[in-house]
Image 1 (cartoon, rainbow, N blue to C red):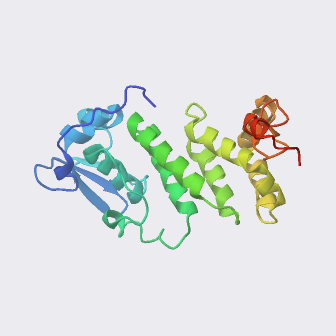
Image 2: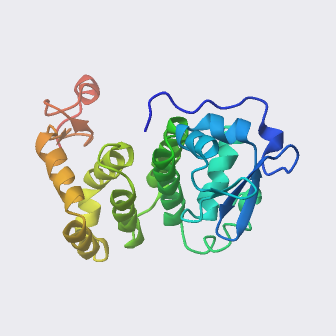
Image 3: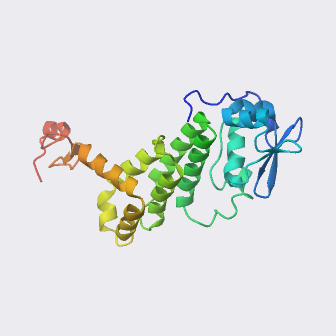
Length: 243
C-alpha cells in the first residue's frame, strides 16, 4: 500500500451515490453506483489508471468491480467521498448488509478486514489505516466462546499480503494475549489446531512472537503483570504481602 495515501477531494460528500454531474459508473454485483472521475480517479493511482487508460472500462464509462462485494465497494466509495465509512447495521447500509445482520459479531471484524484488503488492493493507504483501527476495536469487543472468532485469523491471512502486516500483527497479538482462554475452551482449542494446520504462516508468526517476547511475571500480591520484580511498586508502597 502506498505511503502517500489517496488525495481525497474536499467538499465532495454531497455527491456520493448522486447522479448529479456523474461521469462514471461503478459496477459491483447487481449494483451500479454513480461516481465522479474527479473524486474516484484522483483518490487512487489504480483507479486513475483505469480512468485514463480505459482498463476495465466499457461503453458508458463503466468500471466493473464485480469481483469485489457490493458492501465493500459501496463503503470504499463512501470513504472516498466522505472520508469515513460505517459498520454493519448503519442505516446507510441496511439493504446491502441484509445478509450479515443475523450472523453475529465476528462479521464486524471480518468486514473491516475486507475493507483493509480492498484498500491495499486499490492502493488507498488512508482507508487502510481507518479499516485497521476499526478492525482492532471490533476484535477487542469480540467475546470468546465459539469458533467463529478464529475464522477471523484465517480470513486475515487469506486476504492480506505478507508485505502489509497490519492486521496479521493484530490477530497474532490478540491470540497470544488470550492463549490461556483458547487452550481451556473445548470449542476454541480444536479450532485453533485446525487454523494452525491450514494457515501455517499464522502458526509461525505466533511462535516467533512467543519466542521473542519477554516473558511476563505477575505481582505476587495483586497479580498485575510485571517484567522483573516479585511485587509491583504500588503493592510495595502499600505494604501488601505475598498471597
